[in-house]
Length: 103
Image (tube, rainbow, N blue to C red; front, side, top):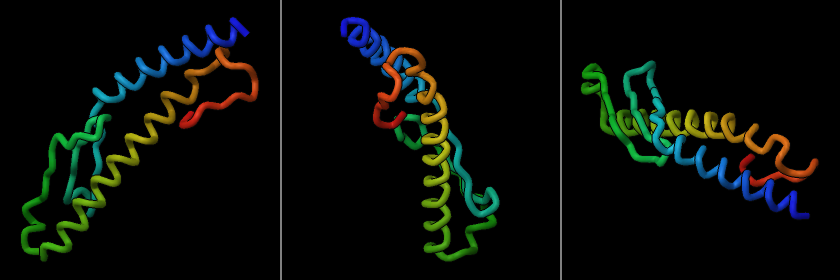
């Protein structure tokens, strides 16, 4: 039991370190064939939004839809990277069959 508790404490430390690293990363998202691009941090803060001037002839609803799609794409990229980085972090620290949420 003591070994398992020690393993869980080590796992928590690794997860915290990985979450800090992911929060500092920047994830790109695009929509409309790269007519709209966004950059968000792992913490979810939008750092930049770029709209190609060619879109300015479109109606506001189209532009809004592309911005939302680009943000969703950036968040999907963030989720994918998070899962990849966290998936192997528990290796050998928890008894077989024990899973943690999000891993």
